[in-house]
Length: 300
Image (tube, rainbow, N blue to C red; front, side, top):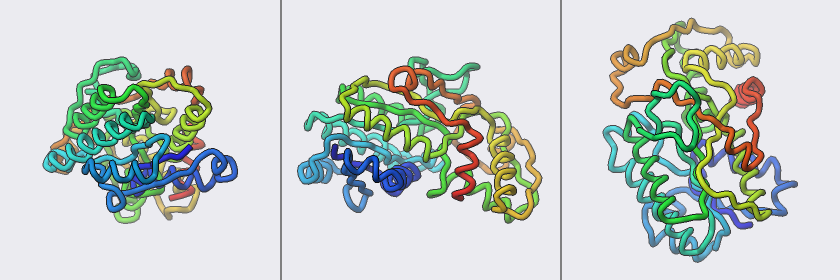
């Protein structure tokens, strides 16, 4: 199977490439991976996408490219819409034209956070910010254009790659004796390596003929706040000797943080995703979060 991985420079893109290399003895016989970034193929340009499709002729597209800066999206909405909507639409149309599947990564931020139980794939969506709105609209574009699709909603992605919360916490811990972290937003941190393993399980199942298309949730196995996640990252970092001392972590409300940091984007207070469907349909289970955290911090 020839796989076109879009977004090779992002957190998930880098993790997917690393996962493929680490498991090459198992995956090389089944997959040929061609990964691209914007300089290789501009997905916001339909002609660029068409030229690449004609040249590489993939059997499936994995779209890990997105505009993900939640705060910046409030002022840079046109670029956010261009990447998340126009780019996704071009990929969906190309996949439809060549009659191949598309795996597209989406987000827990399509929900408004008013639920008190984990969100299911069938629950109503009501994004609170521009990023979430464009990701929800990208899902609709795919559903309208292409039957053979998998939309994978994930949450709070962290890894050893790029800019993300885990790396920020370690950096700040070396600069400050006290960190203020939000304690009233709850979600499920997701280690990008775990999500990569799930994506490759989907690819292997599709390659074997399974075709249960639709929308699925996949995230880390434990719900927590940003305050709790910070504590866990720092405790594990101390064990791994990634830091010499642990700063004091102070709980702060979303409203207080917004005033302090002058942020504009609203975030859902509760965005825990229910992941029963992906287990029932595809047999994909989530690793224990404690093990995922240890592996993450070891790689930071």
